[in-house]
Image (tube, rainbow, N blue to C red; front, top):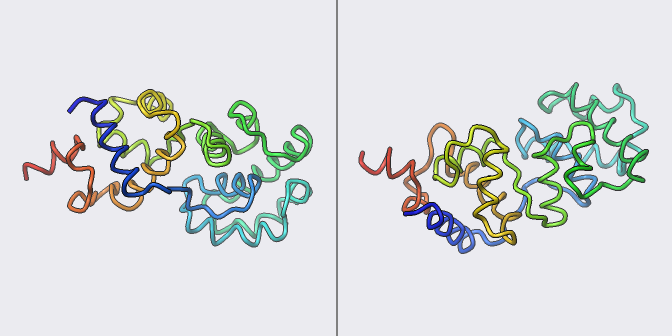
Length: 215
């Protein structure tokens, strides 16, 4: 199977079995999504979703969050990983949204990465989810699963993996492919014990055909 054939098999499978894939973070607007994605770094979406409702109730918009002090916001975030940094990032992010972007979340990667706590991965998530832009966010799940299946080859960094993925995924599917691969890694292609027995991608998966099929 060529690499292009592998991509086509994987995309066809997900289009058939999970056509409406979307983020598991709960949000009502771009600002809420931005807060949730910043909090989700090295933290589960489930934990973030338990935390954000009280934050959104007290700080419903960038203006209100920009006036929060560290001591006021920290108690809402202390159950999240790296709460000190994330508290500072959220306040700084809100202040910049108010001062530089008129209280609106920008929808370009170049503008988003200027915000405290926002790297390329987060910017790609925001633009692809909110605006369906063809941007591929590569987190640990996407990085691992893409390499295992054989969608990426010897990609040493998330950015290298991103470039390889967007090269062979049709633009109109990139915003969905991000979720397809993340969810596959979260529930099927687990880091330590991948559930190859129930995986529908076995015919195309390099890991399965090399390490499992012969056993």
